[in-house]
Image 1 (cartoon, one colour):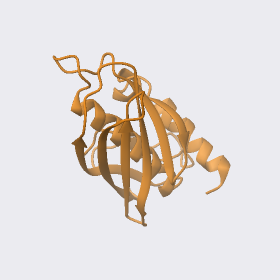
Image 2: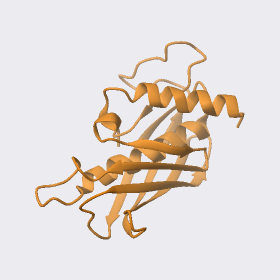
Image 3: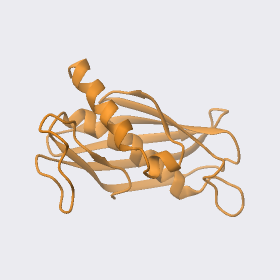
Image 4: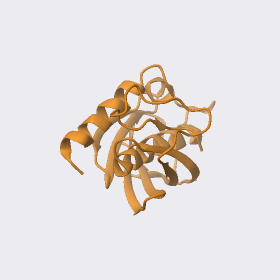
Length: 160
């Protein structure tokens, strides 16, 4: 993928994340390519009543990273939506940052699948998730068109 196109997609993703769940969860993208996306999220503010990282927060991080990877794989003028996510929670995290690494397992014309490994500050695996995204040339039902025909595709973290 052309570096300029990849940069435009990353910038559109970040701009489109303003005032969304991605921003509210404190997710930061550290690295992004079609093959691998890395991001972090604070545990603080994303906990369940026992003060531990909420499993749903791990799923939001996983879907965010996988969706961005899928958008980078799909390319400009295509759309990507999460259609299935599964997660296994291995251990609790109660402080610091968790880091997610999304690695592409399959990248086809209509489907992409990513494995997302989420680890705590000590490098211990907290969660393993798998996300499958649908890639389309059409705007998904009830979706909105990009600002221009050359805008990067929107992603919809949390759509699955």
